[in-house]
Image 1 (cartoon, one colour):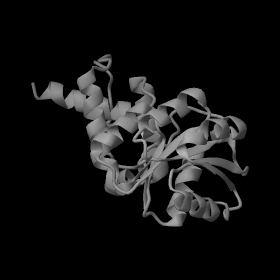
Image 2 (tube, helix red, strand yellow; image 1 turned 120 degrees about the vertical axis):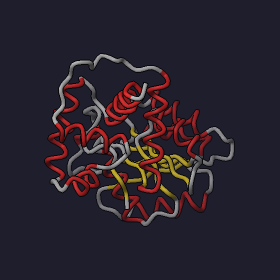
Image 3 (cartoon, rainbow, N blue to C red; image 1 turned 135 degrees about the vertical axis):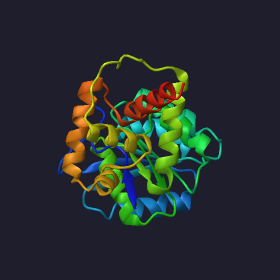
Length: 237
């Protein structure tokens, strides 16, 4: 199952508007057999069109295809996946990057998330999970496999706090329910999981999220989590 750790897109984008249109996916994968098999499987979906190249030929492919989503193998033979991800996002800002691996180390995940990738796919995931991840990311959502979500999200939020974040929220009043939602976001829970924990609908969770973001002048779940971790650290002093 995929946990979508951003039920509200961080920023509107071109890719988020491709409702009902074909999603162009660029696959950067060294292993020819994996590349060809994955391309064939994904191209069976009527709303997805895959083009694929090994890691050393992706520049021309991306320029010609202008993809909505880039699937990137974390384990490229040259060990340069992070540099490739950063290069893709810099040169092709309209493309959303999804990293693929079996079970990457948390340090690697933090580097990729901090760099701005939009999602991760486990290489042993079911095909329907892979397709749903691509579709969600194309809409502008951030997606992590559920086995990564809570720990990674929490660690990155703590890192953001340690790096220093604006502390401009003194005097902002939150309702008891909004404080509960903030605490659960800091734990890395998805909207669905928060709704289940608090016995409220996903729609109500989204409404609380919008209110929280407006009150705190924040625009992402990660910033909300960082706010919560910083607040807790200040309270314990």
